[in-house]
Image 1: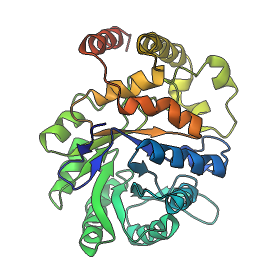
Image 2 (image 1 turned 180 degrees about the vertical axis):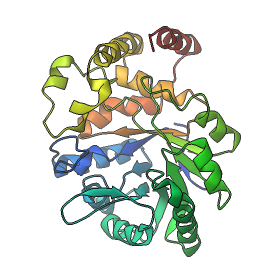
Image 3 (image 1 turned 120 degrees about the vertical axis):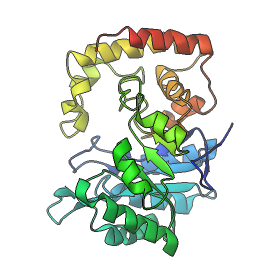
Length: 317
């Protein structure tokens, strides 16, 4: 399995990393519904055993719970993967969330404690808000790197203009944008900019929160838990739901040619973009992790990549 350098950093990553959003559990605004912590830890151990060498989480996932689970799982593992997390979203005693770039020093100490590490391998600003505070927030991350609390620094969900503002202060090692067959908004400007400026890209939601796994159906969508954020997401509602499930069906047929799932094809498609260093792939159980693991090695043949792109480009906007 190949590994790739993240930007100009000293981090060399496997093609897929373990995404820890869903293992944050329920009882918060962006929940994926109930989650068993033992299953989460087993999923992380399975990913590490298979060779995944990085985990991406965030303080806000489960209001700190995801970081705690990642910390427990990695502490129990004989192999220590890179741990990436994010700042810029905080909550109060009422579990109400706000976005701010002015509390990062407190946030990093809390994340270090929950993750049970002395240094975070990649620390990222989760969202570029408040926009007016981007420079102050990025300056704080640069200071944390100089102080040794974090190894590398990156951004998530930033536009090109916002990245340029950061680059005037300190280099950006990586960007984390959404990127999938359903959401290609990063293609025209953001991904070429990152490629040109040697900014690594780790894309999230390559299977668009489960829609492109091949296992999602209209019946499953209707049965999602009431606290699952996807119930209200636009791509899980008509008329987009039917279109998206048709994409999953189409790539599932391509996957069948190779004995892999639609989800593997969806992930592999994102990895074909030369700007992408690695894809973040969530897993809520060891079985889910095993199911997507082939994406770490599978490569789409050029003719099938063209077949998929032709299909996507012919879809109505």
